[in-house]
Image 1 (tube, rainbow over the protein chains, first blue to last red):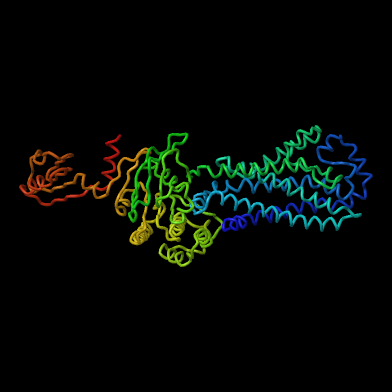
Image 2: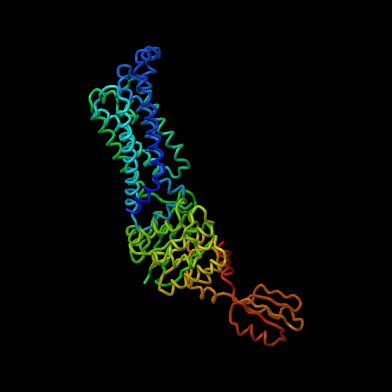
Length: 265
Length: 294
């Protein structure tokens, strides 16, 4: 437990910063919703002038963009992007931090197994993300009730908000694998930004090309907000794919980390 | 009883570094020196003992248990001080030490205070603000706070000023008297000579010899320096066992290995003003091993 608390404390500052950033992004979007919805007709005309492929790439759907949930799901594309960077950052840091800051010798000469270390670090990262999502979710609900013009489905709203956590968990797992495999990561942010944006662009291309198979390659597209808006649920296939991906990534990380040589500086 | 038993330990890396077929034992309660120049494989051996890296072949036992399979259990009784210490920069010294202590299921508060006092360490400072030497002190306290039965030191004195080295050695002596076993790796021979009873010499990943320090010195030559009153014949001391004979006026110096009585008789038969007979220091013996093998 001591490692868990130590790690959680270490993530405290970054968790707070990222939570604030996510909330700020959300507030920024939602606060323009009332004016945006009032002038729906003008905006529709304006947006229709854009090529359709651009609109799909940006995740705009004119059918529902002017409803609260539709607008919220559009803003989520950016919020989830930020959230993914946060999760990837934590994931990549988990092991690489100890190597880069050369504290691995300290931790690994203590009477604990490497499995215990990974479990503790993983749990701390997981709890950080849960806390971020709880704070974010509460703020989002409050904001929504402030700007709503008509009633909306709470269940759909919650499901939409949870897509943040959903994508974050995938990137967390991905980050851990990278952190365990790569021998020394000099800059966490570079690695996580590069990875996250690569997947983001794959997702964008997938959106325009309308290719179902490409969806599997971008965790961002595992949650299709349009589908949630229609069905008030997630797509089972992608839930399973995501779960499998996370389980495999974490299992691989445990195995590699347990067998890894920790070299002197 | 052997606290450390290393059997044919081999670790190969992709590159040329590594260790080959290392075997030696460290007995309970002794201070065992492990010497060799940088890159000879001292750290590799130690890191394998601590299961930071895994051996390619061979094995090692600590307290009679395999050092890989029983690593967490064994490490409860090990204190480790690396040559370069790195800790979580944004922590305070006391918080780091408390974190370190939290891994051992006992109360170490008193011991932390005691050690900090001996080493003159300010517990309230941030690790980030500490000098190299002070970080090293944190390392020493961190390695000893749980009162381990085996202390593993990897080039421990780098960065410590002579006064602190002295205090640190005194600390080790006290632990040694309590029956603690110490594995002391170093490339500085004088400190090994001072503390250790036995020593393993490692060269290019292989153990050259494991000897008692006293035996190493006994089996070696003695250094003679004689100041004579009258000029001597140059060949006077040129007897069997003498080497590096140098005669400069009234000053004679040479190395001797063999029956000391022969030389002493020779000295007695001349008028001398002064005589010095010295033990060679470990440095010279060490160079001897290295030169011989090279």
